[in-house]
Amino acid sequence: MTQGRSKEEFFVENDLKANTLVRRIMYGMIGIWPLLIAGSFIGAFHISIKNTLSTFLMTVLVDLILLLLTFRKAPPKIIKYYCLISIELVVATMAIFPRIGINMSYIVAPVISCIYFDKKLTKRIAIYGYFMMIFAWFFRSKGLVEYAYPDSTRWNCFFAFSCGFSIEYATLAVICVTISKRARLLSEKLFSRNNKIERMQTEMIYSFANLIESRDDVTGKHVKRTSAYVKVVAEALRSSGFYFDELDDTYVEYICLAAPIHDIGKIRIPDAVLLKPAQLTDEEYALIKTHTIRGEEIIRKTLTNIENKEFLECAAHVALYHHEKWDGTGYPEGLEGRNIPLCARIMAIADVFDALVSERYYKGAMSLNEAFQRIEDSSGTHFEPLIVDVFLEKRNEIEEICRLNR
Image (cartoon, rainbow, N blue to C red):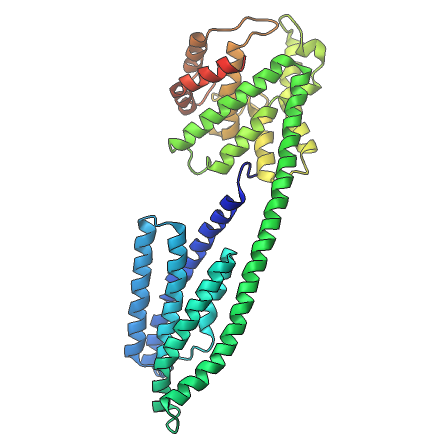
């Protein structure tokens, strides 16, 4: 799910992915030349080893510059243009040598540019490619006269071939620009459609949260605060470099979106138990504990139409496992340590802290100092020590959320 992502961000992300692919193409070009050189040695190709070697060295040079640009974190736009221009330059350099059959390889760079979904880019690369083709034919025609068309002149050869290739190139260039334009329009429509679906899905999720709030005002406010705590902790873990293989922007977004419905299972708990203004009996407490299993069931049965299965799994884990404990004494399954999903481990500390500082029908609210001390004391037993450390580091932000959402 991509909440808040603009159309511009969508295409920037596409450019980054396209750059990765084009870089691989450029690095892969190096592998062509050793094959050509080896083929020339054994007589498989009638290509000058000197010419092949010079083009190989040029390819190595442009790839080294690309490595430098990548290492220096050059802007994606520079990488994009550099790669496409370099590919066309290598092709044109190859085309200078008459014994290398290039044919319509001049159009390679404009074709590759189509993956950027940018009509202007494709048009610019096509124009650049055309002039590089004419430049190559100017030098290539001299060699063709010497070994293939001795009865012709250089200029006759140049005009004959360049005119024919120009017609073919122009036709293919128009097709490339059309494809690029069409791909852009289809991508924009797809982006708008996906955004609409995601907005509807998000509204449905928050409707569940509102359902909890309308059932129990205490639980409703608890949902808002715990969701805010979860966001603070998840983003702090990510910014500190912890769980970098899991906590990317998308996963943090999933946890924050799943947090409001972590207690959705409570809608199946009778009011007489959920709203009881006194200490619960053992039987009643056992019934309350089933809200984790019931919550997972509700999410999996009700949110099945959500296209993003990764989010659905995260939401189900948050609902089912947010009462598990680091030492394995929690419920419903008694999971231990990192067997508990990360999203649920983050949710657990937010859930317990808010319960400590909140007044309930059967208990008073604990002071903030006492609550933070209880969290610290529970490190390694109830909560993961690393998450406790991050939670305590963010104390000021946690306290501010607590004060603003009373």
